[in-house]
Image 1 (cartoon, rainbow, N blue to C red):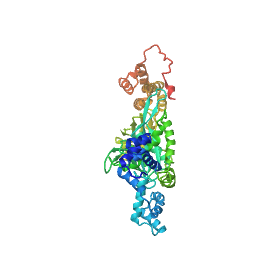
Image 2 (cartoon, rainbow, N blue to C red):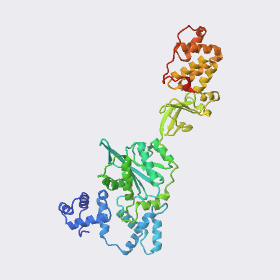
Image 3 (tube, helix red, strand yellow):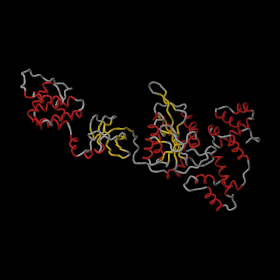
Length: 514
């Protein structure tokens, strides 16, 4: 080190210029120092593997203390104590381990060693020296810190050459500082939750808490004491048996560990990718994983272990197990139970049954790619596999009252068969009604009303009324009722030329329903 310590502001400028590629000769000219002095300060930073971002993050006081501690000669007693510090640092991440417990172990081996106050002082000074920005002690498996970088990565459309910016998701486990990075399309909850889930499967386990920023995908309403968590993210945390802990607004030190990780990622990922071209998210994320593996296997500054070794030794055993399958993203909708004990799910235009006791009530629909869940005042009252056939019914017989059980058996085949037992003209008429609607289910009530008229007027009159309605080319329940009321079913047919029905693929006919 230089014989006379230069001003720390000048030191920060020195290293900034060096990181920008300015030569030592130019640095010495600009700062008014000798080339040997510039070389010694640069060598100091390199020895401790400090990046440009880490140096810029240090305060003048922290930087001054860092140099001051290296210039004072250390006693043999202190040098002996410092040999234990890397071991102490790893042990402190285990549940229940305290500084006093470690001091007691130290005193057993060195009865003439430092007392607890001096032991604690020198240990904290060592931690400041090797980790000058981050001073918190996180327990293994406790928290996963999550953030997005301020800058974006870019992919290029292979055909148009258009540039597309991607957000960059970063998360860090507290104890080991094992890091995961992924490029994604946006900050929206779908992308946000997918990135968190990919991180959990990357680590092979789940931390006890997820520490997030106050972005909308995580928090719908900020509060210093009880922030309101996004409903989908809350459901995700329940599925993975973890807790969401939003940071306080305007309190960056609540997640300083991931803020520091972001600065390092700029150097070890962004800078490495600056001269490479990618055409898809999958392509760039594959490359990012390669760089993250290198980052996690680099030794900590001033320590002999890496993020990966610390993760495998301490953090991995403390993580909770992953579920059997991945989480299915859920969406939410509201609805009302119809009089036929079904709700209408507008997204798929499909009907699902619920217990008849809830007819007329407002319900909450929770749906994923594979299932539909129906809730009434937080109680789940029905669950069905998701179907996407428009205007179809998914019915559980137990949901319907006993006098409505037969409704669940309604089908085109049933109505055509029933009409055939009344007469040929009746059957043709029912086929026309079913054929008239875009979806047969829309005509079931009309068919039921017409066929039940036989109980009042008999099969013969109903078949004749259907024959007359066929001549009119009118197909609905009210036409049949009008014919019967006016007695038109008894009028004899007028001779007329029989029309031929053209053979065309758009005319389905009764065979369509068999």
